[in-house]
Length: 445
Image (tube, rainbow, N blue to C red):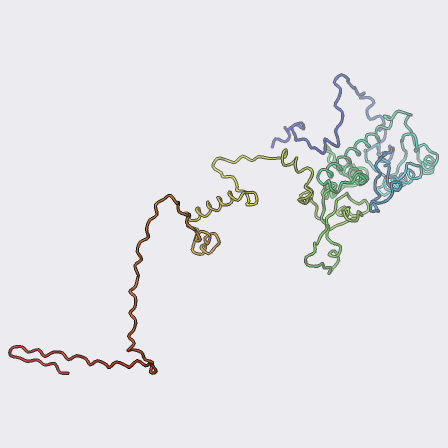
């Protein structure tokens, strides 16, 4: 197929990836050399999951909505940051969202991560974090209470916590790309407060994607189990439209009025961590609530997104001008004809005339076809008016086709009350007597 010989630069560029993952071009005058003896020094000696976990926080100026609400909470009660935990041995990533950047929410995030790790059979031994809230007394006391150790980066030296900084860059760019892709294809329902859901979906994709060389996902190594790859199989584009079955039809014997739609439109926003992988989180566009659903039909290509005639899509003009494709046909192959809604009245009449002529030539027009509307229109043909300058021909004299019948004589009137006296019936005339020589012949009466 030649796919292995195709370079990445030869592939068509994705607009969404360019918007979400664009970086600065390298400066040709500056050369950066990485010391190979120091590569991976932060992970040196960490061979088992949980030996060391790098921790950092991602702050967002745009408040993120809570997952159990309709998105109408005040800003002070919404998410403002994310705590990211990265395993040093594998690179497994876990995120926890916080409403405030204080010690209480950070400790709650720490406890949630450790419960999740213990559920997968991994015990955390030490942490490596930045300064700030992670060096507060309450946070340090929580780590010491769990018989764990902690280390910190130097002030102003973020590269000493480069593992978590790199994870923040990867997850933030992927989540941003997902949200931009959904906004480009469905701008009507764009909502920047959904970034916590996009971040969670990006983390799940990162952990469940198999490695290109080994074919093993990070979640398999971290949990020491073999994955059935159901998550990649059930995965769909984040933010795509989804048709959800009406709740009344999900129960046994449930019915709806005959002319009422059986489904409603929602938006796919990821998967629930506490439900089966076959269920998806769907955002109700009317109420704003997010709920796990099972009876769903996904529109991965956003083909069912429509607009009214009064408000056409904003990108429709660009698609009609710049996103056109041309197909070349062979010389002996006629291109397919367009439907009538794309033709002018003159073109429609011309195509109908060609069709009738072709049917007459091929003998496919029968007596039954003479009853259709087109034939009636042809029989109602009217000759064009005469030119007043052309000579007028005199019409030929009319000749009766049959002789007129003579009127009956009044003597044959059978009405007995008539005043006209009946004429006597004439006697038949007797033939004359013919006399010849030698014989005589007489005709008797």
